[in-house]
Amino acid sequence: MNNLTQSKPLIKDTANFFRTKEGKKQMYEALERVSAKIEIKPPLTLEKLMSVFGTTALMFPPDISSDESLTVGRSTTIEERTEWIDALGNLHLLLNNQSLEREVRKLTENPRLKTIKDNENPFENITGLESFAEEIAIRSRVLIMETNNGSATDAKAVVPNQLKIGEMLAEQLEILTIILDIEKKLNKTETGKLQETDPNAENQRTSGIATEALLKKDFLPVSSSASYQAMREAVALKKFNKDVESPYPTAYVEKSSIKGKIQLTPLQTEAVYGEKLKELEASMWRKREQLSDLHVDVIDAMCATWIVQATSDESRAVITADDVLKLRGLKPHLGGSGRRGGYTKEQRDEISEAIQDLENIWFEITEKVKRGKTSKTDFIQSRAIAVTDRGGQMRIDGTLDVMWFVFRPGSIFARYLLTEGRQSALLAAQALRYNVRTEAVEKRLVRYLSWQWRIRSKSASYLQPYEANTLIKEAGIKVPSRNSNRAVERLEKALDRMQTDGLITGWQYLDWDWSNTNKHGWIKEWLASRIAIEPPDFIRDSYETITATAEKQTLQPKLDFTNSPPRNEAEISIQTKAKRKALKLTQMQLAELLELSQPTLSRIEAGRKVSHEEKQKIIQWLMETSEKSVKPE
Image (cartoon, rainbow, N blue to C red; front, side):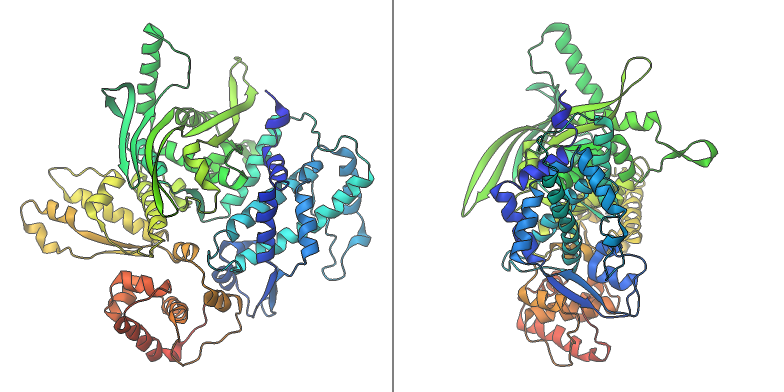
């Protein structure tokens, strides 16, 4: 095993990426887009900051004055941005550089370096160069990922949380350039060469930084491809069956733009025969029986971790069993004297075995891909994940206690996760925290809806109803021939729980009459009934294309709404959403109040064109409630 290339893939991949033409271009564009400032007027409350910045508000220090204005963002020059990008390309020089570490430590202890503005030494928060470099690596790719979510029609589109991330990154890059100047003066002859270090500690640190970043988020980035969702369903519901063409467990899939099969196949590439072949076949069927929603939780955690750490589709990421357990919301056990003792061997083994099972997932899929105005059908053969290395500590019995995995997604997913039109969706972090055994239905519905919302974001048709039968199948709820109402109650219980947890804003039947339950065979009619499910506002806002007008309204909190009618679709969109949220109405409730269809109201809030009659209804409502007018969030 070559620890030289395996121990710190995050920092090295980041440095390599920002030395490429594409890496420099992406970072320059990101830094240029966040070169701006906004002012937030008092009073400053956590609720107000969360409404403007989302979860990024948690980055603000707790001692912010509530009665003073807050300026967020930083204007930068072309020279600064160019210098910082060059520094990012040399990020790896901070690794294993003991002489440089000593020099920086002197700076952290120098009281003369305190700034007049904050009376704070900018170096004193640096606990170590490696951890500092890893923070920069993660924050730089987060900034690129966030700004790439902006408007495709307006390269300047930016939102407040991006400004805060850009401001914090700029501060770190400024310090990085100073540190690299010191490194040059030390006249190092081994620039860029890394010494061998303890891979266990380094890989755990790399995984831990990514996990801490993900734990601060309510939604995790995962693949939104049809192949990924088909795999999650096949694994969670054990859809792998016998196949006349193969001795291995096979799930045939046909979903959206894909068609083909997913199998559990051995990693062994050399041909085997006789008893060895039978044993391999039997081992795959044993793995089939072990599949569960836990395996889906694990691959969702791995996918989110890879997106945070990766810089290209060939990048590898590091994850530990402990960090998967953290993302699933499990707390470490207490040791002696009430101290944290960590996770148990059984818990870690369960995660390690799940990762090993996931390695056996093999795709043979045809996929229709649009390239410009033409469509092409690709044939893809790929593993779900490829684990390139693993390590840990040796047990007394001589076996390896696996602690970390170096991996990358198979090409079927990786090729689309980081590109400009990347196939990524936002999965509620709560999906991983639901109990695998007692709340599996909730898990499956959250996954399915997160995939559906990403697809529907293109047309803003979030409230297009689902057939009850579709939801029942996706959730894996069995409909008994007797007491069919149990299936109905289980689905409704899950939807209510998701609403309570804030994963959906609301749900309701559109065409179901409960008097039908008196009829014989009523369950068939119920399965054909339609259910509308409203996503949380965070999902809408994250997927919404930001127009130039919307950007101007968002980045200028001083703008006031007058009692005059909105002049265009963008103003209607902003005012409708702001007024609805202020009155604490869901889209379903407001649509019913205005006698509009839910999809129509969704289009209005997305800034899309609707009929003149529909537009007049919403304008009239805005004017009638003008006395309660509010500013946009």
